[in-house]
Length: 217
Image 1 (cartoon, helix red, strand yellow):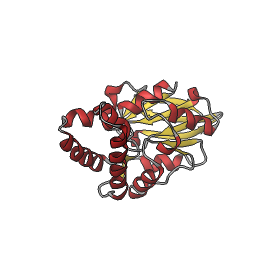
Image 2 (cartoon, rainbow, N blue to C red):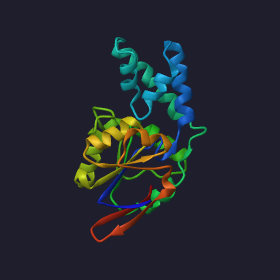
Image 3 (cartoon, rainbow, N blue to C red):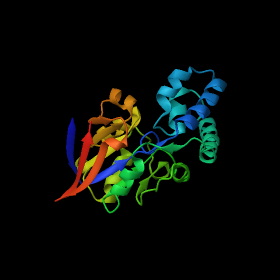
């Protein structure tokens, strides 16, 4: 089934949406999980799409914040340095090229250094407008990042389309009042507006008053 959406801006998550960093993310979190004696499946079901400190606070609610901050800094340093295995989600480069000259932004729970490292490793350009962990007080599933990006682009939330893969990200996009295209097989379970297996199922053209997104859902 082919669906056409009218929009004025596109907001894109990074991990799991534009780049596949699963191997790195899960390796580091599983190392952390073993040290904490936590259930690996429970941890991996939570951490995608969230800032590390936020995930640690949920998983270990009684632990001092200072410890979470210190360990999240260590994890961030390793994530930024260890980019082997980080690759493009199929269709990501073509989608970003089609958005040149069209309002769009990166909205990621990574900080800017990590975003640049992973996008570069995957051979992708970082959009001129990027809202990262450095720019928000609240991580996804809070909608702050998406709302900030819409404001920077000067576009109403209802006129934005979000591309996301994780439960936290899809929830954040919907909470922002935006339509959400879920990317990847697992995204369907998180109730996006529409879903695609990868970004090769999406094309972008300019309309009379904005953007036309064609989705082969």
